[in-house]
Length: 303
Image (cartoon, rainbow, N blue to C red; front, side, top):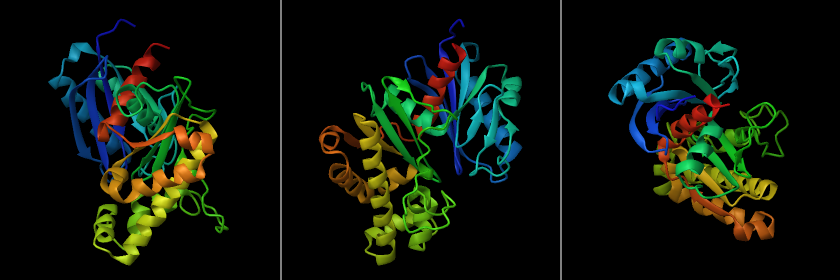
């Protein structure tokens, strides 16, 4: 494919959609964020189209090569369909997403599991750049993640390797309807922290914990411990150089979460790995996933 030098990426989450245009070196040309339409389904597709139209118009329409979408979903890349996205209403079964966007904008569109886009963004331009082996845990409405192993994105057999929200973490749970019960997401996602703290949002839970509220403090401590054990297991299993902690929950509660996570990785990982692995916050913030999706779109177009 002849390069026209610019790439577009979109990160679709349960509460917001972030999109941007980047050049071939990962430098941001333009970006924008909007709340995710609560109706879900086709309305979200319309939002993506309108957001991209605006960004492409602001940039240089003739220079955009491809579009990548980062989605909290299992996707069929060949067809451009979402197969299952539990956090987006109306996307719980197969839905064509890439074809209508491609038809509307006249550009190739590829779909990617958002954990893979997150880790690709941070590996390309963020906290994992320069490494050969990296892991990422993204904590927001849900929990996801991704792996770079030997300078390659590890997608897995089904294509959602790194779906850490499903990591079973409560040995006392008998039902295990993971991730809603017994899984990491049931303890450490934003909604789970808020629910356990008796707060409306994770941000409110963090504020209450800082003010010394015991219920909020326990909810945050439980989440931090669960994330720390998951990160320690991830370190022992894959031996990465760095584990990047990303997402709105990490950003909003870094002072409360990171020390416990880092301590548990040092204490609970395989000893040699514990001494070498770095556990660091993400550098790209909300730009990581859309930027990673843009990078993956370029790779997909050249396959």
